[in-house]
Amino acid sequence: MDKRWSKIKKHLESSLCDRLKGRVTYFATSYRGAHDGQGRVAILVDKKEIINAPFSTWNGDCFSEYAEWENSTSEDKGTREDIIKRIDDRLARNGIFEPVVFADAYDEFCTCPITECLSSDNYITRIIAVIDKRTGRQTLEKMKDSMENEPAWFRYFYDLRVNA
Image 1 (tube, rainbow, N blue to C red):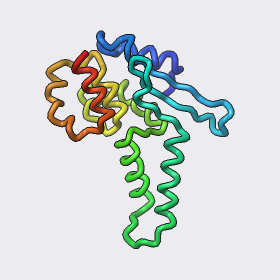
Image 2: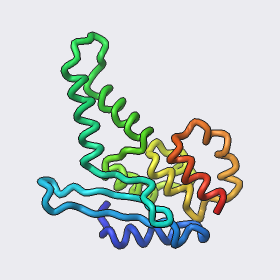
Image 3: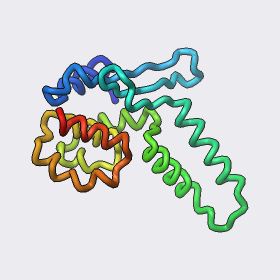
C-alpha cells in the first residue's frame, strides 16, 4: 500500500454503492509509541466498528497459539507453516485480522477484477467488493446460497449491501 491513508480512504469510500455512502467509513491509525509503529484498521457502519484489525489483539492470539504448538510434544503437530496457516484461518473466521491484511486487501481490490475480489481468500477484499458499486444485484443473488457457510460478521456486510 504505497498511497497515503487519506487517498486510500477516499478511493474506498468513493467506490461504495450509492446507498452505503456516508454509512460505511474506513479508519486507520498507527501508534507512534509502539516499538514497530503498528496500529489498527477498522470498517465502521453507521459510526459503529464492525471490523477492527488491531495489531495487539491479532498478535496476542497468534503468539499464544503458536507457543502452544511449539511446546507440544505431539508427533502429528504439523510443520511451522501448517500452524501459521491454521492460526491465520481460525483468526480470520473469527474476524481478527492483522492490519497488513487490510493493506493486502486494498492492493488486491485495486489490481483485480471485481469478480475475482468477490471470490478472494481475503475476507477484507471480499467485504470491499460486496459493498462496491460495481457489484450488482444479480451477482449478490448468486452469492446468496453460499452465505450460510460464511461467518456472521461477513454475512452482516452481505445483508447490509443486499438491503441497501
